[in-house]
Length: 351
Image (tube, rainbow, N blue to C red):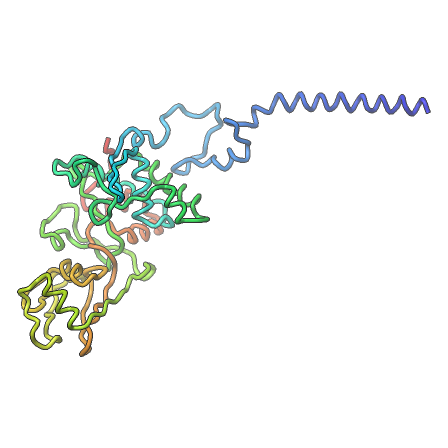
């Protein structure tokens, strides 16, 4: 009995010593398993940096400035839809524009192209002597300036995809830090729209002014675009009322089948001009008049109603967002996309 107790004490003593040694080793190496209080498994999740580069161990990390520093060093005074002026860093603002203007499910190179276009447009607004908003640089209304959404609102809209989508836009903004679209060394009017009907539109067709970098180019999107083909139907009386409210000189007294004349079209099939009631309107004017998604349309009369068959969405000038995504899926970089849609332009530093 005494021998058993002695053996038991000896075994217990060894266990205590072993436990003490293990605890000492654990305490010694514990700091190596932590980075700023975050366990190793979390550090592995964050090992991918913007641009796809792998993170270096903390003791071998380069001393270069972090991605996004140029944008974080500049501010934007934003007039919100609620009528308030708020000041944001450029990176915060561009994140909100990309989230509002382009589907976050798009390819990252397309999102980068959107970030560059939005950043360039913002600089143009900030440098404009005839600002649209005396108290702010730009507003969050897409019909006036650029759409903008706060991060919390965007993430709520994305639901379970919030982490993935937010991260994609983070990388798109940081990966284009301070970059914009330049022509002859100066920032351009980096216009963009949703989807084209095979080709973009020359600015001269829409606004009457020729712009060297806003020319018509092929655009590769198609039926993968939601509502790529759409219809608007209006009665003869509705067409007459809408037309005469805006163009009282139009003569819509005869047979409705003769109200619309033969359209003049561009290479992409869009309406450049079309007679209506004896006056000639541009495709853009007709699009606005009848609330069509684009100026690429045909119109038919069946004896009771006019049917407008429409392809694409937007004014058609500059970068097509769905076209950019199609190019990115085919392997084009954001630089490739921007220099394709903005003829003769280049991607370079804005500051």
